Length: 464
Image 1 (cartoon, helix red, strand yellow):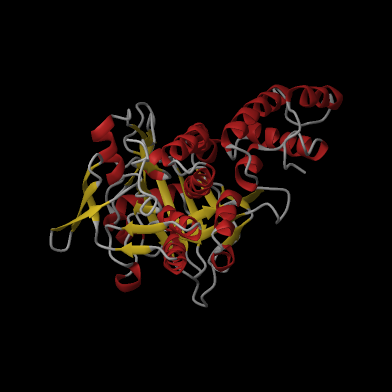
Image 2 (cartoon, helix red, strand yellow; image 1 turned 90 degrees about the horizontal axis):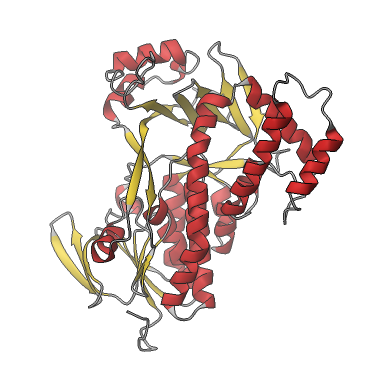
């Protein structure tokens, strides 16, 4: 199953899925002279509106912006993005506290609207020369013969195509991955959280403005559950409530098993999120009409099938959304795959190199995303956490090229996720041990801490 093919047809690629990663990859590869054809199971969003069961808005960070720059679309995307300086923590008593993500406004993340971003990338992919076919759901693949069957769900009509190479950018429920698993195993497994989520909406104010501080990611942390809200450029907020699927034995906490009706969710908000309640006029209706979303982490032993097929983004390594890195990681995949194909004319070698580079990094951000859920819902208002955070900022100020906060490496830099995870673990040990039994940083042995930082943390490339 090598990539020995005639020179005339060897520059043809078939992408499955015209979502965010599929469109971005289509731009990058079309610009490199590949003949790219994309098949998408949904209709053209420019004709029928954007349909998606996915989160309405996303957090765009430096990794994603780097990929958008590579595709020549960063400027148009950023015109619609809303800056988020940090986490706005909403306490039960209604008080708020902003925890900045970075040192200043050069270190922020951006809220982008999924539908607007997808349309921008779709238009750019077509301008770059990609051909996109809608209403084409991948049904079956004969990898050996190079044939695939697609179905138009409007009339159940099959459409058979010949392909040289398939690239799966078709998300967590990837049809191409299912066919690759059927053919070769791949050790696929998905670990679901015992939590799910529902999306709600805060509308704009009467004058079209925002009803809360727009330049923040709002969090209502409540221990084993939480609510978050991200701003949209039209003055709305997308609110996401994360709850356990079932109550923990011995805990009196809400869950999707106990909060079912509109009346029950109103009672929950009155008790636990009282400052958010008046901002969500359609709470009951949204609750009863929006199904809960599942949260899972997808693991695969392999991402490619010789030169015939490769998967990337959520199709290869879906993750929980708690680090805001799913899209950023998928976009980083797109750049890495395009660069691997530049470096290795043989596609089997290119896919192997891409997998070898990205698979450990995907596993690292999957682990960090799971960990960040506990931090967001349970630790952001914890005194020990806040003292460690204060020390982290002090050490960063004293040793800016060595002690680089976890969030900075993941979000404002393109430090490989594997390296960010390894350094974060060392730094957390230093923070926990230095603050153990303390209420303040007064009387710390800064010289001993400096010696430890220099001994355990080499200078980080790109830190300043």
